[in-house]
Image (cartoon, rainbow, N blue to C red; front, side, top):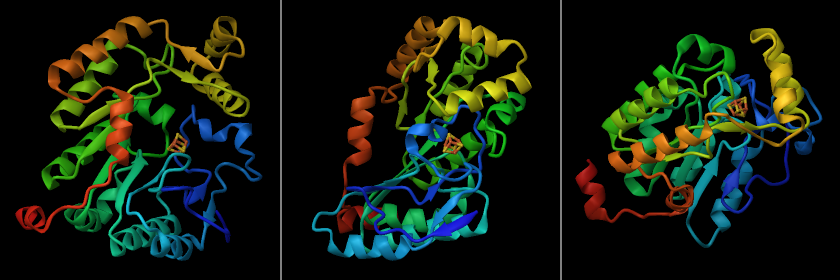
Length: 288
Ligand code: SF4
């Protein structure tokens, strides 16, 4: 971990509080060379003045909106300094009555549940949770330093009880690893039980480019001997690495979501995530 002062934090309504991540997902795109990270991915850079910068930006913003975070680095890493920065930023979002949405694979957001409830009473909070692998042992291989899918689903049910909406990113499904119907069915059933509002799905597969490809292949050699060679033969240097099971998994996914009335059109889900809501006092009172 190291610290750095930045000049700005918000890009429109989005921000990343850190560079690098501790969760260790073997397929992580944020490791790609195009992001020009000048330090080791696990040596997370903490934007230490993020709360000051955020407060300054929100004070001056004319239009309220949904502040988003977590696209490049999980806001809930198991480290006291990162958790502190995340909490302080979310407190500022609450103070200035903005909405909040964040992407995570961790259940550590539950430590800030009362703060999330407070924001959700005034405006809107949506927790975006990524789920890829239902099997616990496999989950610990592909996403080694974060809670299992089962634990994440329990956290989503907790959100449901508290009336905080959630959206799931069901991605990536890694060819020959977790791209099977049993895995997809188990995750979808979990999402239904947790009443998630929508599921973002880009098909069964993943993306690989310089930087993340090399890391992914090293992990394949470690945990799935022979699989790297199979990928190289089938996909070469392709950016999109589609599962051979894509077609029937895709069909199953859309049929399931239609039947269970879960939002499954990505455009519609992103519009929902960006849509700011200010709750009227009457609605707020009903939530107490
Ligand atoms: S949680 Fe996201 S940013 Fe962190 S390692 Fe996993 S994929 Fe990368």
